[in-house]
Image (tube, rainbow, N blue to C red; front, top):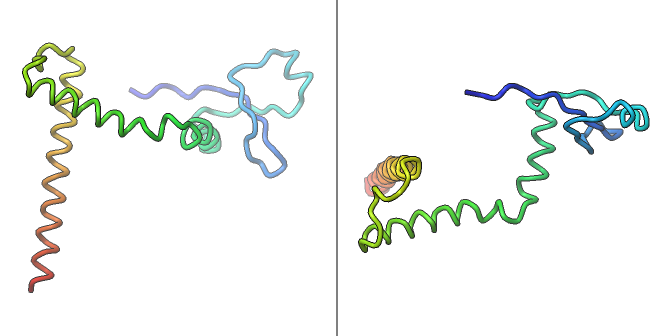
Length: 124
């Protein structure tokens, strides 16, 4: 279920790019600093602005996917060595790990089919 759009206040520069964003402003803040406009949280400009703040600019976000994979591999090693049981994990963690295994298996089969197709076309 998607969350409803939220109204935000944005300040734009002379080129129309968002340079400031506020969740809420008091009447005094609006009066003292003209130029604030209402915008929706689903506005593409708002999304671009937020992505710039929290996407590539966040040094931790670049390593999150890699760390998730390391954690996943660590859990597999612990299970394989009998240190923990899969059923020891919370239900939500079990579901997420099963989903990732299934996705990896599906992707692996697709990549293998692509490699087989390329290999056959090269040898013909």
